[in-house]
Length: 380
Image 1 (cartoon, rainbow, N blue to C red):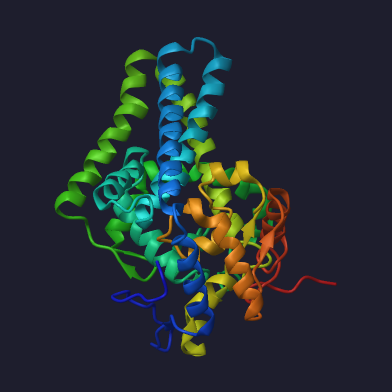
Image 2: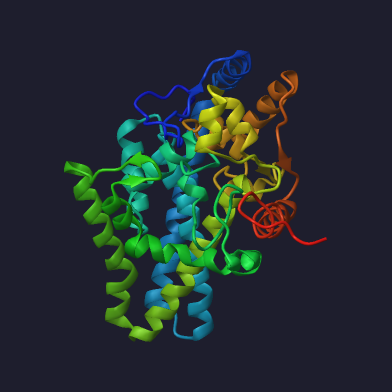
């Protein structure tokens, strides 16, 4: 989503004042002009689409082959284990490269094809309808704002933002959260979507039950997932084997997705705020807010960028989420140049390990496990 957003209910602070963003300004105007010029280079769009379709084929074949070999061929524990890991990584690859782009409207310029690819999320166990509200609206509009961005709300298990209340066990979250990251797919597959729909909102964003085609897709997606993930394997294998393999694949899928998204926002370098702070500050520039709350990582790692669907270029993604991720590496050069011209810090970790280390430190020290407005200061 871009800065100009109509019809989005802005969360209110305790005083009743709303968060207000404006999408203008010389910085964002120049940025949009430069990126538009880049995307209009002769042949660029066609090459990007061909790369997307080729990548889609690879991800789909990888997923189907892993599943078929796991269910129909594997006959030893180590074969099943390796194929379960392969399936989890393949499903994450589908999520990064197909599902994510499609649900942002950036997979293809062809509307019907783009819409069809949205259902890939339902096929792997999560509702695309719910996710578009949770991610596209709540997260992309109100990035790193406590109470509005549901992507940083994992209470009571984790405290990702300084404004969130502290629990005694949060002092150990830098240890146990790495395990919990691998379990969130279970929430996807069980109560997650239903919980949001029952509550009728995500954060402060209204969410009503889907209707018509969306409702049909919601239930068909749940049925399809249960069929390929559980019913067919249970016909051919003992319950305990299916349970173990399902747990391994789900853990790999969830851990890969969760850690990747955490490396963009829950870091020492990213800014955090609350609904009350944003409302009190008055109108803010949306593009600057996105840059201040988002960090790139490993920009020169082509293999990682290919697998992650460009999600190591999260700054560029947040600024231009309706642009296909294939363009992000080239866009990053433009964004960095425009940021430098306007005196704005474009933040990026040079590799994967520095980003992981920053996230670990943020969990442990940076006003979360030990410090923050709701925590007692440690003795010196």
